[in-house]
Amino acid sequence: MRCLVTGGAGFIGTALANRLAEAGHHVRALDDLSAGDPSALHPEVVFTRGDVRDRPKLWTLLQKVDCVFHLAARVSVPESILYPREYNDVNVGGTVALTEAIRDAGVERVVLASSATVYGPQPSQPVNESAWPHPQAPYAVSKLAAEHYIFSLGELYSITTVALRIFNAYGPEQRVPPVHAPVIPHFVRNILSGASVVIHGSGRQTRDFVHIDDVVDALIAASEARDAHGKVINVGSGEETSLDDLVALLGELTGKRPDVIRNPQQGGGLPRLVADLDQARGVLGYFPHVPLREGLVEMIEEARVALRARRL
Image (cartoon, rainbow, N blue to C red; front, side, top):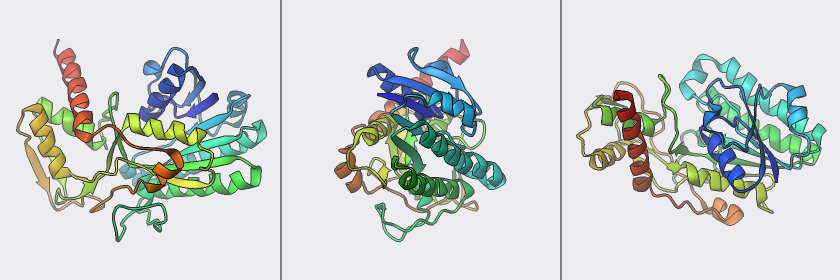
């Protein structure tokens, strides 16, 4: 398979591009490097720096491509509240520009990396794909709009389209930005370094943490599945974990006592969110195989190595 991974130097994009290259596929990766780092890409991945809205560049990269994995996006929920126009420009405008270019280049399939944030608060859990979305931030709105665009344009242009709503992905090589860091690598780093862990809200709010290997499995399955066209599919672990339980487990695995600071005055986001995986199992043959405990051990060991290197 010849494929293009947009956002190919990001956390999920790098893991996906590397897995595809290791399996012998021809992989092109596009990233504007606003948050990505191409240094971890497999040597066989052909990397191009550029914007997903750049139609001439897309035209060049899409020649003879069989499938596009569209991961390029701005991804911070808090940042999207400050800069909604930029999130709309990149996440929605980029999806439209890419789909137009896919049409013109004759690419047959596109897999969109969407987000579980589109669900917002839901009356019942686990949440399945038939639930009515209640996006509560511009990032979530932009992802929902991107879904509608690829499906509507896909029908008009005869492109096979599928959108994966990815829950809280984590794993090795996940970067920790100075602000709005993903919860697991942020907590791991702080606990190991002796810094405090701040929990906003009650700490009883739950999330579905899914390992990067499982996310990549689902993305690749979506590029091959016969019955995935026009479908939205959840990608998670199917396991519900509260932030309090996550901190307790990290304390057990690190052998340290986390210094927890609670901030009940600031909302902790959705009270519950966990994926119903029935459709993922039926359409993609997707069965997550990395338990949270195992994934956290891997993250802790990686963080320990990084901390030791910093002290040398």
